[in-house]
Amino acid sequence: MALDYLRKRAGGIFAKILLGLLIIAFAIWGVADVFRGFGAQDVAVVGSTKISIEGFRRVYTERLQQLSRQYGRGITNEQARAMGLDRQILGEMIAEYALDQKAHQLGLGISDAVIVERIHANPNFRGPGGVFEPTYFREVIRQNGFSEADYIATERRLMLRRQLAGSLGGDIRPPAALRDAIRRYENEERAIDFVRLGRAEAGAVPVPTPEQIAAYYEANKTDFRAPEYREIVFVTLTPETLAPWIEISDEDVRKAYEARRERYATPERREIEQIVFPSMDQAKAAADRIAAGTPFQDIVKERGLDPKDVALGLLAKREMLDQAVADAAFSLARGKVSAPVPGRFGAVLVRVNKIEPASERPFASVASELRQELQVERARREMLDLRDKIEDERAAGSNLSEVAQKLRLPAVTLGAMDRTGRGPNGESIENLPARDQLIPAAFNAQAGVDTDPIELRQAGGYLWYEVKKITPARERTLEEARASVEQRWRDEETAKRLVARADAIRQRLGA
Image: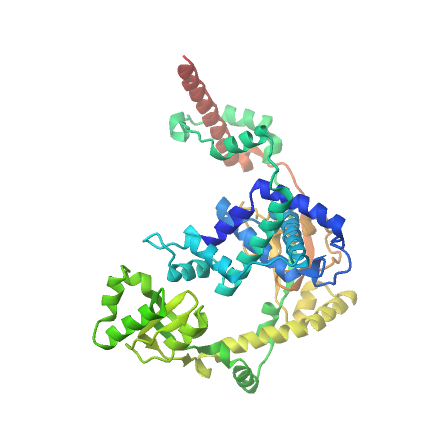
């Protein structure tokens, strides 16, 4: 993809070394106020350019999603910070903005002709015939989240950064040892053969005798202790939990619908095909032939194109990259072919195969969801007042269950829970809000003592909790723990057999 192409070309180790040298140079030249004088909405300022919180968050989110896809699992913010992802991204953004700032100060620029030449030469935008295809180009950058203007601006900035990096470090060559280490790290491949031993390879494990169970229990008694359990009650206050108690009049719902009507409207969409010609003369000649009766598809075949090469798909006008082509396509009747259009990447003939008229969801179909949305919005405004009422009631001596009943809030009681969030049956307790905060806090609190509420940052609310009862940890009797003891004994016996089997295989291989 084009985005990967950009990242790879600008993200090599040599480019990073050069960027580091450039940043040091900019500090000498006067771009030193990187972390001074910016407001609450900025994470850094490089010269006159600000790195906004929103801009940093967008890049951070994109990189976090890339890491999650790379590792095949979700990467949490805590894991990302432990890897230094936030600091790495900020450093890269400062380097990039510093280069942009210096390029602007030096009056450097890239002409449109050079940009177009570079785009045409990019192998990522070549179609099946091995030549640049405007349709394929637009599809690739759209899949990567770019508009045409955004991509051209990004390419222009990248070329300017390379000019600066090349002028400063063009003759720098890393040591041969470093080049060799990088080559081996990137290109080394290994083939691995392995044997996996499972429980079946251990054979039938005999049933342990009562004496074996008793001896194993005595030797590992602490492993079978019953953990400390706590019974807690909690009340969650978020816009979603408060919303059902808020009444919204029909008149307010109707007013909100009128104010947000555009959200429920679907614009007109058209299924569009286009043929791109190198010149207006060739496009006009083809248009004359079509007007004389030559089918549009015959022109497509003569130009060596497949139907998929000319199909843009079903699009709204605002989704089209070329405004001139969009204007032409949305002024045609169904089945008609346009006159030659001067597009950005050549002369274009456009045909419309299908028209889906604009539509709008009626008020009756959205009233319910809109009412819920208004309830949540109003709940956000009323939540702070209700939080103060809860605190006032607790300060007056009421326990959490009494407060919840008085203010008509749902209170949830957990009968027993250990430090891992499991009940006495060993199963994890589901739907526990703020699990990573609530469990440690509950096991650090005293029974019957008021506790501070937990702020639910993600949900935008608060959670109050009280410890009602504490059941201390204790040793289980052998009869209570018999099933667990027998299972643990079987697991260890199985492991011993598998280790012995693996040692035998290793000895045979060594011989």
